[in-house]
Length: 280
Image 1 (cartoon, rainbow, N blue to C red):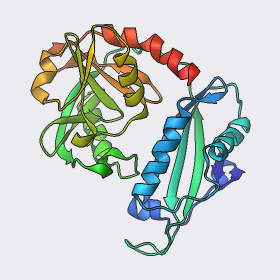
Image 2 (image 1 turned 60 degrees about the horizontal axis):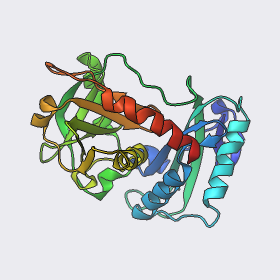
Image 3 (image 1 turned 135 degrees about the horizontal axis):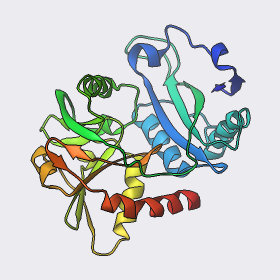
Image 4 (image 1 turned 180 degrees about the vertical axis):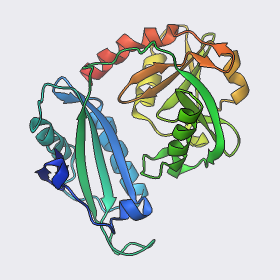
């Protein structure tokens, strides 16, 4: 089922025009949400990130696009399915059809879709996760690179590269050859009692899970969090690397080139993350 501009439809009956601006120009933003236990995890953070993204892209935010309205629209489509299941939900917003690069209007349309998840809460996947650098293309650091838009060609090409070379994930670099993020989430590097994650100024996505993990780490004794640039040379000196995103939570990296990593910190963070998600 899909909620298309307020109308709940069977997936096969939900269509958009070929001149859709999201399709033709990538003129769209989206939020990927996790729904479990009757609630949207970290909904307030997702909502305000969406509003900020729409403002930066100069989209006209409808008066009724309140946090309560969008939550109700999401619940409507959840209720059309087996609502006790956990879901991955995608909230997609695009500028209305018209114009070429210069739009005829800044008004928007939206769609909400969902798919079932297996686990109702975050689990630590301890299977192999070998990573490599993706160096064919670079993320250009700046405000736009921190937004969750539909312009994801680097992520797509990096994912193909990973598949072709039997890697489980890749790390993306910016124009200064600094680590920015993984293909599907933010990255954290643990070395001793210091945990580093790339700053937004380096071009990483302003991730919701990134924000939650930083907040949890700040509450831990004897561990420091640094939002600072990460050089590829630092990776093999680290004790642990993990990737964060809203759907999976924490994904420990097991190997980068000849270096193997533990998951001690990730195991410490996981129960605190689940508690935070239930209380958010």
